Each structure stands twice: as structure tokens, then as C-alpha cells.
Image (cartoon, rainbow, N blue to C red):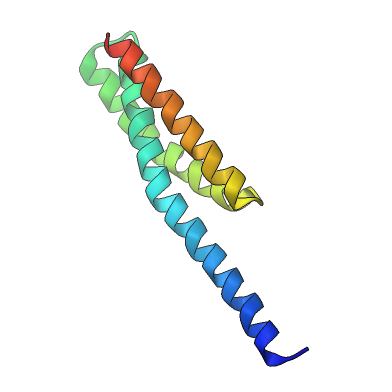
Length: 98
């Protein structure tokens, strides 16, 4: 195989990893923020306790999203799923706020 095909393969691989890291960091941040808001609005305890509990869960949520970003093989399916989940959580937040 010529050297250019190796270069193209490793360049595509590196771009895929960079895209997944960006998706994990920024998409994870957005989904974690939406999850915190949704959990704190839906818990039947005082506001302070609900916010404290949801913030404690935020580390776990962000870790799970980070793992899922690298576990899903298709980058297109991953981005679509994260976008769909973000829209669903945002709509539930709007419904719960009234």
C-alpha cells in the first residue's frame, strides 16, 4: 500500500477521535445541564435538596455520556441520539415549569 493511504486512514481515525471528544465534552455538558434541571424540577422534595441531589448526580451522568460516546460505533447515530435526547429533556423542562 502506498504511504498516502496510510496517512489518509490515520488522519480519518484521528479526526473521528477528536470529533468524539468534542461531542463527549460539549454534548455531555449540555445533556448534563438539562438532566440536572429536569431532575431538580421533578423531585418531590424541597428545592435546595433537589438541586443538591441533582448536582451530585451530574458527575455520574457526564461520565455515562462520555462512555456512551465512545461505545457507539456510528458517529451520525450518536449525534442524532444526543440531539434527540436534548430536545426531549428540554421539552420536558418546559412542560414542568408550566
